[in-house]
Amino acid sequence: MASLFTQEIHLSKRHEEIVSQRLMLLQKMKNKFGDENTERASLLQATETASRRNLRLLQDIDAAEEAFQTKLIPHPQPSMLSLETRYWASVEEHIPKWELFLLGRAPYPIGAENQNEVPFVQTEAKL
Image (spheres, rainbow, N blue to C red):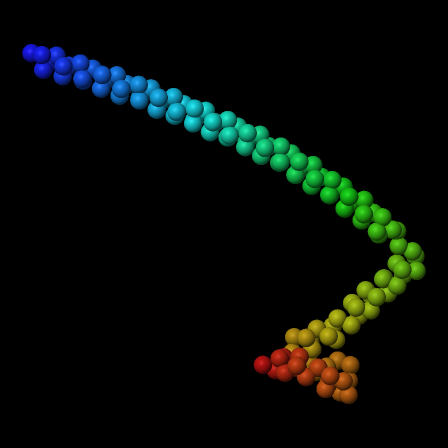
């Protein structure tokens, strides 16, 4: 009977050890999860702060770009507008001549003496 009593005492002590280890592990887990939650909250706050900062930076860049564009491109002078208008009129006038050549359906439009200057394009057109 004494051996059963000693065995009971031994098991009781072992039970107390296991329960105390369990409590210690539970406390460690609680601390770890608390630390992780704190870290997550800190990371979330840092991410939100960075997003707001990036948005402000993008807005500042857009504003600076717009200001730069308005300063960079002043209102063109009338002589420049006239030159630009004449240029585009000339381009539109010559498009039909060059269109067939570029599609490979006609010879070089300027004249036979210039045909040797662009043999690659004509070779491509014949293929």
